[in-house]
Length: 142
Ligand SMILES: [Zn+2]
Image (cartoon, rainbow, N blue to C red; front, side, top):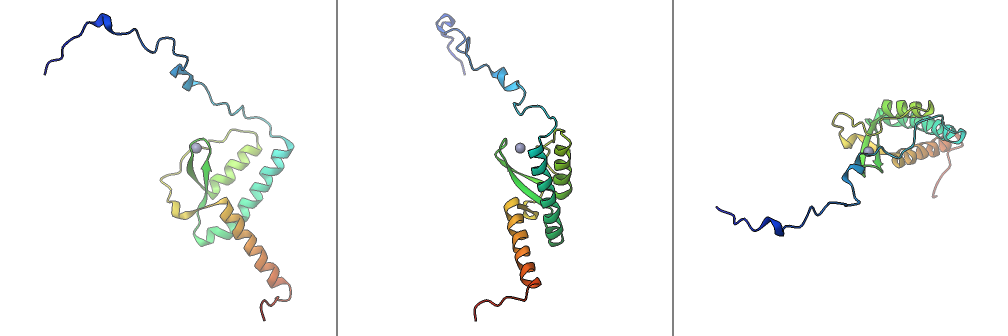
C-alpha cells in the first residue's frame, strides 16, 4: 500500500498551538483544601458518625455485613469500606489528618456492603422494636 504524499506546505500549523485548554492543567493538585484542625461543628458531626458506625457495626456485623458502600462524588463510583476502615477514617479526620478516601479495598464483594441509609433504617427499626419490647408490648390491630 502506498500513500500519496500531498504537499506538506498545505497542512495547517499545529492546530493546538495556543489552545487555552492546556492538558497540563490536569496535573494541578486537587482543590480539596489542606487537612487541618477540624471545626467544632465538624468534630461533633464526626463524633456522631463514629457513634453511628459503632452502632451499625454492632447490629450488622453479626449478620455478615462487612461494611458500608458509599457513592464517591469524585469518582462517581461506589466505594466499599470495611468497618475498621471507616472507624479509622473518621478517627483520622477527627485528628485533622487527610484520609486516603480512594484507597480501594482488596476486591470487595458488593454483596457484603450496605449503604449508610440502610444502616440508619436498620438501626431505627431496632430502636423501634426495643422500645416496643421495653414498654408493655403494644398491640396492633385487634
Ligand atoms: Zn473515589
